[in-house]
Length: 106
Image (cartoon, rainbow, N blue to C red; front, side):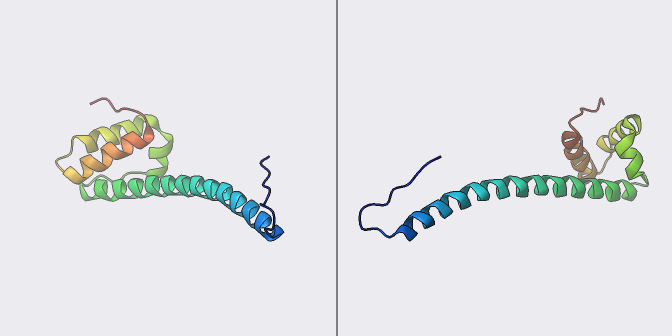
């Protein structure tokens, strides 16, 4: 543990303030890590919602629960999306594929 000794004549409140600042900086690091995790989860959810609607625009209605739980189904749906004429759908599918961390064979 780091200890801080105030110079002679400095009030003890300075010591307490310094300790609070150090603790706050550590807490801020934890909050930033939490915020990044929340942001990643939200970004992933938004990509899946975008994907669902872009697929619907192509006439493919996907089952989000099955997409999450059935790997063969997800591969089939992503393969179709990656071959689509829609640039937006291909881009979204590629992003989603990256988030899923599983390359889809073409």
